[in-house]
Length: 121
Image (cartoon, rainbow, N blue to C red; front, top):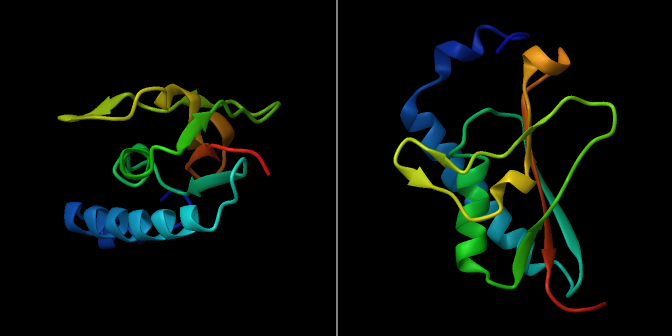
């Protein structure tokens, strides 16, 4: 929104929920393509917990063969994923995910979670 202020005009709670449902479908489908032992990086350019931690929580509840791995980006200021937002508690270990805030990086907002499927190659 810092770089495109007009984006704020299209923002609404309904829009966030719509995007979160779409992201859930995409991530659940992508999870089917990961080989045992494989990793998948989920990244979205939003600060919306519904589209970040909420989507990852949905995957982890639906697929107990995935777990969150710690993630970091050297030389980039980041913050841990949220454990809860409003009335929703997210999956345990969400602090392993990371959030990039524009005020910390002078860049776009991002949420990232590194997921690994159980098993070996």
